[in-house]
Length: 368
Image (tube, rainbow, N blue to C red):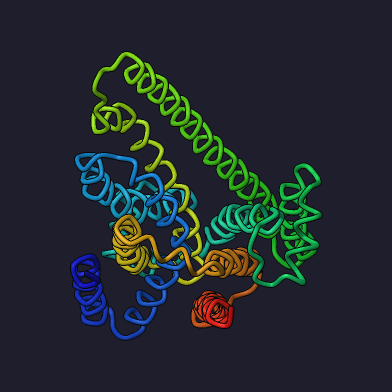
């Protein structure tokens, strides 16, 4: 069962890592591996949400999501989006950005390095909003209860996450303002940091708004179909569950793609905290995206992975750590090894805590 579901993911992982080592060396192998692990972990909640919606769709639309959807996820969000970020930040065309990365890596690296404050501010704000909205929300399960309980109470204050994120952005921008006398470029970069950070916040709000819009559309469609089903039953007419599922499938598909895109933002933007190499990034995130689809299928068929209740917490703490790291790298350089390791450690710790919790619950059941 596992091999059947994850077979393609295992094969692409082996090929991708081998290609990275052959083409760029062992450093690329390590970075691609770290990016794959982070993408899988950060997208775990995506797989859970996808599975809950996907099981409502008929077989045809499930296949559409798992085929055409994966092309959109891998080539759209994991390849085109990073190139677009670099192109916009470095003020070059997308094709030119790819050509530079292939033909003139030194110039490409210089462009990306120069554009890094804007990328870091945009990504840092986006990721910080994801983390803050998670940590300020009341949840049934609490991993670090001593921290999450008081923060959940604070979260009852309206727009608190936006206020905290904007304060973090101001502090980041002021770092450049205080150093303005040492370099003429710093004054301009402080403005760039502010503008890019606000753009990151706006992007987060737009993505959240689109997700809510499609979710509401989906609920309306499901309610309408339920009413039609009740009318058909009352009239003694046969009801086709497959036909009813097909009517809402288009909204389901759109909703899933918007959700997938929004969940992909954290992995793509977080990847910039680890590397500026768009091909390493696309390869690592693409491998991770394959596992997200495999996890979705597994959840639909088995429905067991949601037992690891703290894994979502670990993934969001990793997002928070990446957000802080991105904002810090506006001014200071941080090793990719440190960046990648922090996220993996947080996620591994949450997974281990989930396993221990499950064992305690099993022991309590046996004792009872």
